[in-house]
Amino acid sequence: MYLAKGVIMSIIRETIDVDRRPEDVYDYVMDAQHMPEWQLSAVSVERLDEGPVGLGNRVRVTRHVGRRVMPMTMEVTEYDPPRSWAMRGVDGPVRARVHGEVEPFDEGRRSHVTIDIDFEGHGVGKVLVPLVVRPQVRKELPRNEQLLKDRLEHTGE
Image 1 (cartoon, rainbow, N blue to C red):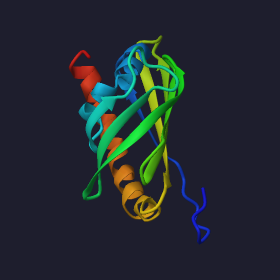
Image 2 (spheres, rainbow, N blue to C red):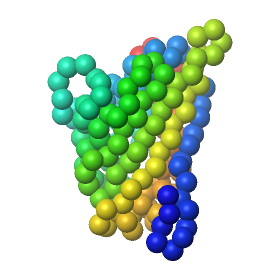
Image 3 (spheres, one colour):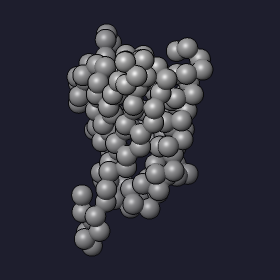
Image 4 (cartoon, rainbow, N blue to C red):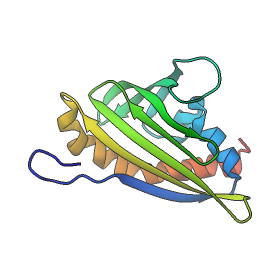
């Protein structure tokens, strides 16, 4: 992705190993109500669809972005349990594109979790993404993955 002055922005990627089966990790991550438990910037989450999670489902996530609190709607664009998922922002000034993968190891008893995040700015978001959002997410994503690991390994979710 290129910015106006030729600066290349890269996807933010973090990986962690979790001492839980891929199915457990995937189910937890895809249950929107858990987002505020393991994502530091998530204030609240509201499912906008009924029924089982799948392609096209939407959630409204309210997040701290810098000093602001911003609601944003995310849509599931890939749903391949228990291996991968993707979501994209469909409204608001900051629109995330998230891709996650869960790879089994240790004969399927443990999981290698990788999360990639990229952003698209609209309006004021064009300023927020490089100055506020990317630095915040670069700092937050490793902590989020550690919270995910701790939550899954110690609470039995």
